[in-house]
Image (cartoon, helix red, strand yellow):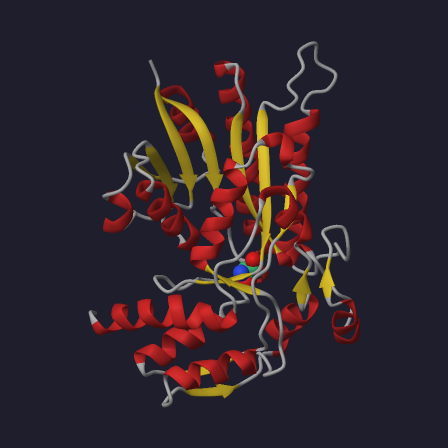
Length: 340
Ligand code: SER
């Protein structure tokens, strides 16, 4: 008998950590992780097995396929938007080929189990591309089907993988004798920037918000690489995890889409700096604009419309901008740096 497990790719990353915390908190013990780097103690102590390996390694995935019965996949491994611009071909390989490999694993598993395998895919506001700052301001909160003209390799990768997920869920080998519809139960969220109290992101373009907060808490200077008026939606890591949990546990018949927008708050970089100042009056931030990274932020929406997520699976963030700081970020970040 193969062991029944939940697989998390990129388990050692930011959302990976959050997922491990939440799933293990619910008493789920059969988690296996895969990551390029050795998982840290937090992850190791809450998972059944953490494999050091690459999702591009088909032999490794074949071994995982043979050893485990996979109930669900949370595919978090990716190269984020800034890093992807430095190595677009590698980003494509990891973000697209890696996703294809895991979708294929999900399909093989579902076919051999004769039941569906849930697949969570974190998409991003990077799938959107607003042609100009004027259009961005004019567009306001945009719907899922608007402005899907990504300007980054990462955004292109995410948008295409949303389509791959839909293909695997609905149309996989549609000319074959056997119907595979629904075997892969693909569910995806287009995340805004995510701010975690526990970890820092690596290689993203929305990183200025978490970096500014963590630097202030550590008493370090920070050069913010976007203008004070730069605005995109953000949410707390705990709300991001809540959203994944809500979407993944929603009854399939309630879902009218495979890919949903969600939002919580959308402050400008200047507003983020001002709220940080309230809690850390000595916070020392200069706005030293990197025009290229600013250009990416200008192409992302100032806000998204998440009515469908609210209607279909009851999405509601816990933290608005004020609560994100007063109830989550400040208490947790303070205790983190006080104890380190
Ligand atoms: N936070 C991501 C990034 O900045 C976007 O999904 O790349």
